[in-house]
Amino acid sequence: MRAVVTVVGKDKTGIIAKIATFLAEREVNILDISQTIMDEYFTMIMMVDLSHATAELAVLAEESRQLGEKIGMSIHIQHENIFNAMHSV
Amino acid sequence: MVNYKDILETIDMVEREHLDIRTVTMGISLLPCIRATAEETARCVYDTVCKKAENLVKVAGDLSAEYGIPIVNKRVSVTPASLICAPFADRAPLIGKALDDAAKNLGIDFLGGYSALVHKGMADYERTFISSIPEVLASTERLCSSVNVGSSKSGINMDAVGLMGRIIRETASATAQRDGFGCAKLVVFCNAVEDNPFMAGAFHGVGESGTVINVGVSGPGVVQHAIEAIPDADISDLAEMIKRTAFKITRAGQLIAKEAAERLGAEFGIVDLSLAPTPARGDSVAQILEEMGLECVGTHGTTACLAMLNDAVKKGGVMASSRVGGLSGAFIPVSEDIGMIEAAEKGVLCLDKLEAMTAVCSVGLDMIAVPGDTTADTISAIIADEAAIGMINNKTTAVRIIPAPGKKVGDQVNFGGLLGRAPVMPVHNQSANKFIRRGGLIPAPIHSNKN
Image: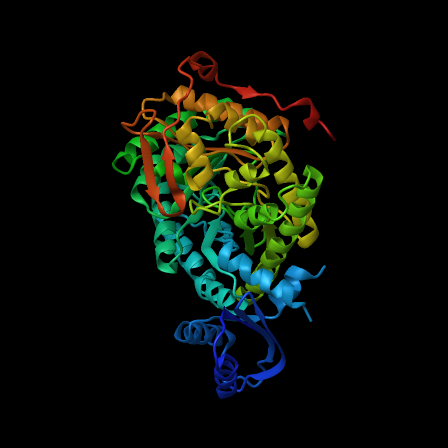
């Protein structure tokens, strides 16, 4: 199963490192990363593979929300199908 | 892979524009629960609802976490209880209590289906059942009731219309301590639908299969935001934008509905394409109409704006879902929409304008507080007007009206939460007694003869 990770917030040092570590600890494999700075806001979108993940998607979503609170960013992990459904005919 | 702009748009819709799945509603047939006695039937009703919906709240929570879309309400609708209680209608409150207990046990906020369908005639057991509604709504917390008094095919049962005026007044009196809260759980329909996922009017029709998942989507905030982004567009461009937005919202609903049905071992029923507001600012249908260019909802032009909005939402939604049903349209419940509340407080939005608006959208005069001394006949006359609009226009209309005990025009009732607050609105004081007391049936319109 694939999911999309989005990270949005004020730019600072070490954001990617923290997120990548968080994902690696849970055996979540990163397939694709895109990152940019828009109006001083850090915006990153990752496609990840959860086939070997050590936790369910719902648990990962909650843990990533908590990580987001800790480092002052908004982090989401969502099943990729929600985006496919909403944005393709 | 989806492009990144679309991904961020979805995140924005949820975080800033109140996109949510308004309700995942499980419809459950109770016909197999009918037993020889009321006690045995009540026990079976409780067990059946608890068993079939035992994972409803958990599955909705999981889906919400996995897809990152809030699912606001988890609900159950059941076979109209008047059918289940037919052999022992005088004991109907026992079934009502069993349903309310089941809702508490499941941890859901509302359960719909304490209902009767009397659009052409009323059997004795149905009359007895309907008489129990005030007591049952006063003694239960989560049970919702509805009565269908007319249809385009059969006409309007004016005996039932007359009775419901009295039942609504009795329900208000029985819940007077809470501003007549019982009436917020009671809907009078014309052309009631069998697969409506929204409360308080949801019930599980007899033409449905055993267990069904119906989903109601929402997103007034998303539509408002989309219109804000094109301030100088003409009306056809606005309609196009609304269609595209409704498509996206509905696709989210369709995905959740299919997934929920599969995980709960139920059939996927329908997606209800509705713009359902909440009292939160930025989650209002009235504010969409104002964004289109009205100074205040209720002024001249409101009906036209609403007609366009309602149609565009349907066009976008129909394309997005394999099965569309329920009420499907923009809702205009006064107490549940901050823009409607403010317009009613200013006196711009009145009952007569709301009635006109209900001719072009779903569903009807919804969550409207009127003075506590409004007579039963006047309430019946309001129901008759609304039912006539539904009958002639082949659409569902409903009345959910609260004659707030002890309150007069200018006062306010406050139900809290999703049900919001409503200013008490004036009604016409001239009587319709003689009309209502004639009784009988308004014959079905000529266009019902299609065979």
